[in-house]
Amino acid sequence: MNHEFTYEVAATTIVFGAGRRHETAQWMARLGKSRAFVLSTPNQADDALGLADELGTKAAGCFTGAAMHTPVDVTQAALAKLRDLEADCIVSIGGGSTTGLGKAIAYRTGLAQIVLPTTYAGSEVTPILGQTENGLKTTLRDARILPNLVIYDPELTIDLPVAMTVLSALNALAHAMEGLYARDRNPISTLMALEAFRSFKRCLPGLVENSRDLSLRAEAQYGCWLDGTVLGSVGMALHHKICHTLGGRFDTPHAETHAIMLPYTTAYNEVAALELLAPLGEIFGGSPGAALYDFSAVLGALLSLKAIELTEADLDEAAALASENLLNSVSEKPAAGHSVQSN
Ligand code: NAD
Image (cartoon, rainbow, N blue to C red):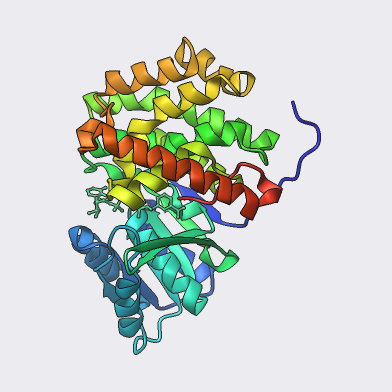
């Protein structure tokens, strides 16, 4: 136990419970807001339009064009639509892509944000924004980026397909795993990370059997909140740098890349950080990396980069790029040591 640490907590109000999305107007009022700009991806346009309908005069308008990795041209299109609406807050309903668009708008306008997450990406509780322009992804951290309020309504995740549920959850657990050995970790981030692992261990096998079980969905959102909070509060390291490199260089899908890499990066790091990762072995049984491999296999998760069409030659290039970037990150951010900024 480390008795010398710094604990910084950012103020986001977290609301949990089935059906609580229907309280969105009340929570807007609690924030002193009365005109929402409602966001979604094209896939979830019905959810955004339904929510706007429910908000009635409290909905200023909708933008349903959110896209993966927050392209700046999409943000500009949303800002153009926002200009004439006199909105005073953003309501994002969706996964990390929609939350990313809300954050990008809030960063540029200072508008308050309410997020209704529908995946387990965890972006809703971090002050981190990753955005892409001209094929380049940059990541920034700013207080304006952190959403003001999050409503975790498990009913919004009931239709998340099983495969996406598993990938999204393993993606979330990668934040918790790296939180365990983050140089700026503290007793609270460790406690939250381990509870996230316990939580997903309790609910994921059952969700693979019955993805519409509401109490298991609620448990998964609890785990997701814990994972996201860890991501937002301590630095990430090797696992995130490798995934960032693979995504940036080979355009591999976000959640899949994290899910596939998780057992391997855990196994690699357990040699250097055995004491810190050992609790994972206690939760899952066995050595941490092998135990996560078995857990992923039972859930039917992808277990090889070959499954997302990478070749052995790609891996050599990725390894060289990732270690080069890692060294740069260390020199750029000395206070956080090996921690790197990544989402
Ligand atoms: P996503 O938001 O891109 O969603 C993937 C697809 O699934 C979309 O078409 C979406 O509409 C659909 N979908 C979402 N929820 C659904 C549901 N309940 N039912 C049916 N379909 C649903 O995917 P994601 O993995 O949540 O987010 C990935 C993005 O989030 C990436 O751009 C990643 O970089 C970012 N991210 C950012 C942070 C951060 O802290 N900044 C953290 C994690 C992820």
